Amino acid sequence: MISDVNSLPEKQSAPNRSSLSLMVQFNVISLVVLLVGGLLVSGWVSRQIELRVLSRVGHTTSLFAGSVFGPDVDRLLAVADSEAPSRLDLSVLGPDVVAFKIWDPNGMVIHSSNLSEVGDVFPIEEGLESAWNGVVSTEISSLDREEHTEQRAMATRLIETYAPIRRPGTGEIAAVIEFYQDVEQFESEIASARRQTWAIVAGLVVAIYLGLVLLVRRGSRTIERQRGELERRVDQSERLLARNTELTTRLKAAARRTTTLNEEYLRRIAADLHDGPAQDIGYALLAVNKNTGNDANGRPVDSLKRALEEIRAVSAGLRSPELESLSLRQVVIRALAVHRNRTGCDAVGTYENLPASVDLAAKITVYRVLLEALSNAHRHGGDCSPKVSVVGDSGFVVVRVSDHGGAAAPASVPGSQRRIHLGLAVMRERVELLGGKFEVGPNQPTGTIIEARIPHGETKGEPEDSEDHDKERG
Image 1 (tube, one colour):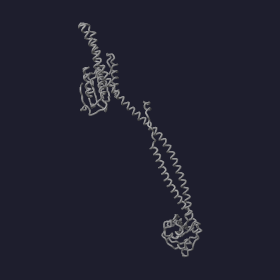
Image 2 (cartoon, helix red, strand yellow):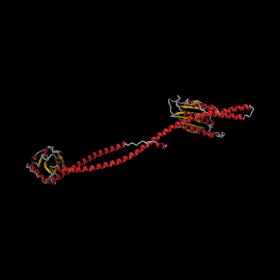
Image 3 (cartoon, helix red, strand yellow):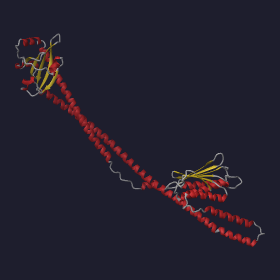
Image 4 (cartoon, one colour):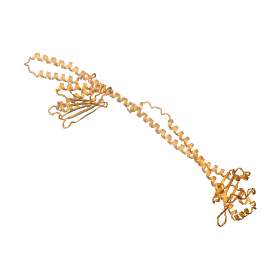
């Protein structure tokens, strides 16, 4: 079997496109995810750097401005109250500061690098309000508010910082200073930090992507190799299963043909016995009777008569009736009738759900099993009224013969035990040859039960018997 399967041509294993496609999909999706993640991380880190730098610049300048203007805050306020503003020197705040304003709590500019703004009152915006609450506020301003009229003439964008000015000793907020710084150096510093961030993130993304690709490619190749091996084994198993199914079908067909042919051979042997030796013994018996007369010794004549009867009995037992045209129920009735004619004993037959169509091999097996089982019950069990049950059950014909006689053969009959075993072996062989099952067991309180499950082939039409339960005597 294995050599036959191995000799069959194997299918060429095609490339596993689904696996390759899955790998390509993973590469594309992982690249997109890593790129998007890298962009988000880089943007977030750049924004955090920008905020940190802005905060550092704002706090550094505000601390410096507080140290410069804090000790003179009362003087600055007094100068403002006298309405005699003076220009304060920007150089004290550092080279990056291009303008500043000092605000009072009412939103009025009390000092400014641009004297034209002194005395102007503007709405208190968020940054100015935060400074009055003690919080330093720094942002890159696009200079689009009303108070930025003078600053818009200097640049399009400036770093705008609001910082509280506290009185020394008490820490009370006396005024708020707003100063503007050039954004060019800040943006240069931010751009350098952003480039470094992008380079680090890009390196990490490339390293992670290459690592994932190598890992997945290695795993994908392993999966492809294992899948190819599995497909090869599955294909071999399928071909083996198909071959076994074919051989099983052919074996069953051969078994059924064998059953039918055996029956034909038995019929031929029966005819040869009847037409050959039986005829010759009959002629010899007539000649002996004619030559010896009625008063001659009867032993040769009796022996010839017994031999003739035995040959005729064997011939009749080998020859079965024409079963092909009979239904299964008629086959069972015929077997019970033959048993009655041979032994003078009636067997009670029970039929349930018999199939309407049964092939010839199954009919022959049912007929032979019934005759052999009934013969054993009569000869060796001593039961003249055994019970016979024939039931159709899911593709099988279940034949059950039970008697209430002794389980063992009588000791006075030479070879009876051997004939029992031979009869059981023949019945088992007949049933199992068709793929059925044969069992022998005790019948309580005494006796034997013989059960045979015989497959009957394809069934067409309705069950043969119209009633669920029917009993007849053979």
